[in-house]
Image 1 (tube, rainbow, N blue to C red):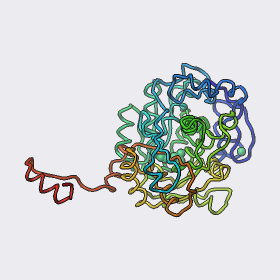
Image 2 (image 1 turned 90 degrees about the vertical axis):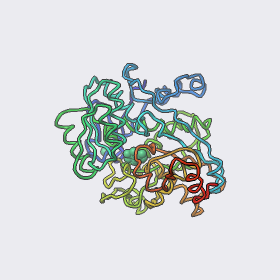
Image 3 (image 1 turned 120 degrees about the vertical axis):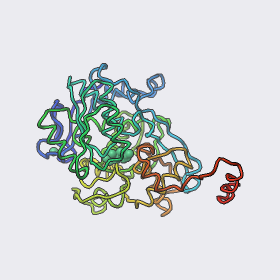
Image 4 (image 1 turned 135 degrees about the vertical axis):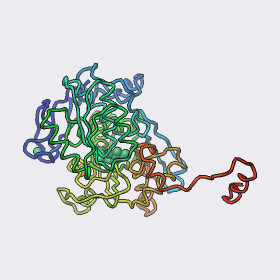
Length: 415
Ligand SMILES: Cc1ncc(COP(=O)(O)O)c(C=O)c1O
Ligand SMILES: [Zn+2]
């Protein structure tokens, strides 16, 4: 448990004392998202390599010395984090780098990395004694929040674009959320949620607004470091929509340096879909602000034209000497079966976008041969079957007779 010491604005740098209803910097408005800072000297005494070796809690709560929760009983009873990190020799060989690791965050309880944020968001709402929590989302943050709210007995009110994949909407309904399908884009859902939260006083789980959610996401970076025995990779690739996950990764790696557990932050490479790439454009132009523009991509989770956490996201890439890149929808779709066949990890379109970016960077000769790479798979492939179906062939259909099967197998060169 750690009481955060300070909230520091990602734009103007002003510091504030944490308060229940202080979400973003009063001077900078919604753009002024906060970094959450702790008493790192104290945390470093609690969270050591030795204490972690003895820690039998294989969930993100093993890092509670740097998580902003104040009451043990606030923690939801749903296992989250400590997802597998697979080493893929095959991908390393195919793409000419030293090591490739695949972090399968689709293995979280509701199937995406967003569970890390929801676990912390719901715990924080419980810390404050709140009864209802709300968010807007492209889908995963929503289904994740509804799962964690359900186990903690909180009412959840969720705003998603009408076009969200049916699997994600079904997940919400199954968990008992009050689901609002908003006609229009994610941006419209976000604005309506923001207004409704203000009107009815629900706890705000919007990741780009509530500073504590990125704290949950940072545990993905901390896990990667621990799973690699504190020898962090050189490059970490991750898909980017609103920019919260990438901000979380940077925060996790930089917290570790402050705690003295690692000696550097990896280069963080953010990958956007070509049709939804405002953060990429701002990075390339060297601008200090992101211009919003309409978004369109097959990867629904990162179909974000007005990214809300742009200030922290740009900071993450710039401070880590990282890179922003884009990939085409075809590259995202073809990455789904390639990653699954090489590693066994089936990601949704936004889940494999990091791999698509890595593949492109490697093919263009942009990665050193001795590079150690981590790829974050942010969401499970079963979340968006329609997306995956576009990237694969048809099954064999046969009469239930061996002769008929034989003919079909021959036609496909299986035998
Ligand atoms: C599977 C998946 N990948 C990537 C992202 C992008 O994360 P962020 O919006 O924090 O940049 C999301 C967000 O919804 C997601 O669900
Ligand atoms: Zn500010």
